[in-house]
Image (cartoon, rainbow, N blue to C red):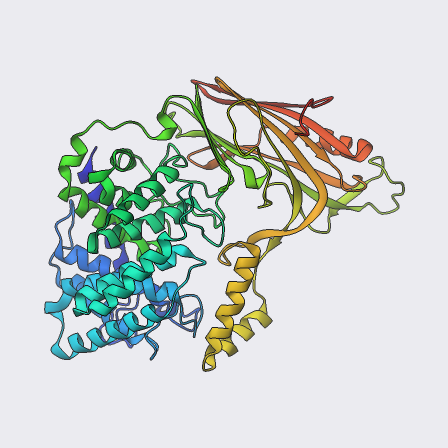
Length: 587
């Protein structure tokens, strides 16, 4: 394990924040990290969360990291201070901050930024004028009071972040009332942990946000350790470990909110009490994708790079933990099959591969060849299922079967892999895994001019943000999707997919039956199976079979296909063919 390499990469990426911040000391936006606001001027308000980057610069200014060229550098300290003061200037009178739109009064924005900037303040205190110190402490008091009065149990990770922020604010201000509010928020999160170990996010499971919740609860444990909290953390980590992929990411494709984050900070904080955490951290720092999750774009750089730096700091504090030989993570263990019925997920380790199955997304499969990466990266195969696109009849075409011509997509596209509550067996000891789901309409969320106008007007009215929040919360609960995503499950159709998955040594056999909801003529059927490397698509090996399936649906009202994934030392081989019948797949 090369800890110095990890620290060097984090410090190098953190230094790039200097290119995002307004460095003109005479500018009214001096210290602002929202490049689109102060530089491009394409937005009319500054995102308060981007000021979290001030914490990253404060760490660079104060701490010793491998290759840190910015330690003690005058301008870095000045910009960190300016970023902190700029954050305070963005606060609403009630103590809250905006992130996604003006007048949002966002719970996440207030929680995340208050945590980060309350940690930055002690590092920068000696650089602050006495008047600025008092002004900032009042900013922190208002933020703490607002967080203590509000909550977000739909996005449970926000509640965990708020708890950590309140602990930090209480410590900074010497206010036991804020620490008490933090403890109550922690308890409200723990009360909602499922028996399987995960914390519901919008009522469902998202392993990426599960890691974020774990991370901030682990931070809470540093402020106020308890046996109950430790047991909950270990239970959560045990569940999440089954869905850590070999490249040390988790399931963007099968998660409710599309989050692929795996927290090495949580692993470090739990390392003294968990062999799973120790192995996760050791594996994580050895991967080539260290920055993919923390610095994949300007937004994530501002939001997350201080997490990478603090991970390095904590890892040095517990160096003795990295001397032990800990058992492998689930993807590297002896063969097993594990199903989590309430989560709608299953994990399989067999000779030659590791796979995750999303039962609630029509039996979506993501499989990785094992034991490790090829030269081009971690070889994987993603079988989402199928998509259906109604086609516009060709000019002059008549008839009701596939003999007629069709051209151009029309109507809504249907998918088998949108959240639909697939019905697998509750217990799975062996044999094929069977799922039956309807195809659902894909809904895409892009607010138009009218929606944006309503957002702007309501956001500018006194207490208008409360109406907006209620409306947004209602929509995301109903759709079980974050509005930051562009797609969500829409109406159920009469089309259905019956899938049988048979796991064997070195191969996965998939048998599918697609039945038409009414006439199948004029419908384009897409096989959503991809081969990839490090989660990047390299091919769609069964696309040539799509015309055969389309013809079968048009003529018979159903299509049958059999697919086989074979795992070899050279990678993953995919074959598929229409099948005359699928015995026993109606489960």
